[in-house]
Length: 388
Image (cartoon, rainbow, N blue to C red; front, side, top):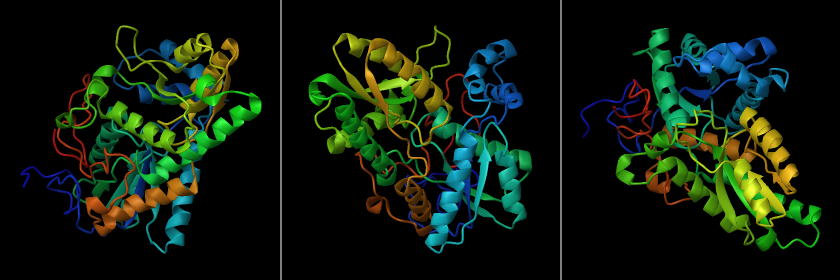
């Protein structure tokens, strides 16, 4: 038995089991996301929130702001989360489940603090959280758990609300299925646009995800698992890509590529960059690529700008036909999977009865000590995981 309790956890999770098998009577769902600006005047204040504590001047933030300004200052992510929230509510209602969904963001309105306050005001006390991020890393898992702890502190709801979080769902069948369908359609489109193409020789599938600092990647997931330099973050992506290609790849070679790097040149981040790979492939005689946004759950700014704009421009410059496949978005399989993840915890489903498409899962209900450390920030208070 672990002696240190997990902060704000249900009785099923408070002692830190890898997977819980005790039912919990959750009375609401918390949908947690990144947030994004919804007008030109929002862009710089939003970026200040994203980079809080780093002392980055507005002049440097404006260098990133042009991505948003090109879309009228509106990030797609908030509208996508409205649609996801509505889809979750519809799926819960279809199954006869009385679980209201509250939505809160890390960096823009509606904030997590407001979501927790509203849930408490409505009389809910036992929440299960879903973050719009499937993989293990600081920004995609641990930071959300820090956000929850901070929001409980700021609202004074610590001790009044129970707050658990569903497992990382990178290899849940409902998350994987939309990517399988996307690769199938993408390769078929290349055949239409490149008559006579030899798929196995002249095309590639590029699975793209957000680059992160190499030091953070190395610390993603429990150190005891020994994932290597890319940590659980890279291992999870590669494992899912293997599954997708086994089902839809038709013998086409594939690579894992990265995008959206934002750190200084002196700091190592995961590579190779998608644009560099496109240039290399053109030199190798590749005629077509399918770009799969494997690291993303919806078509937010990193997809719309870094893939649909920059990567597509690079592909055109080097003479490669590129097809970008969809993200899960509100695909029925994905929405159903998120509800299934809630029910795993509500019903205390044993780990050996939970679906997982790779040997890495099902992932942990309660994150392991030290999981997904941020080297720059160190360990800060979290929920849904063991200290530190």
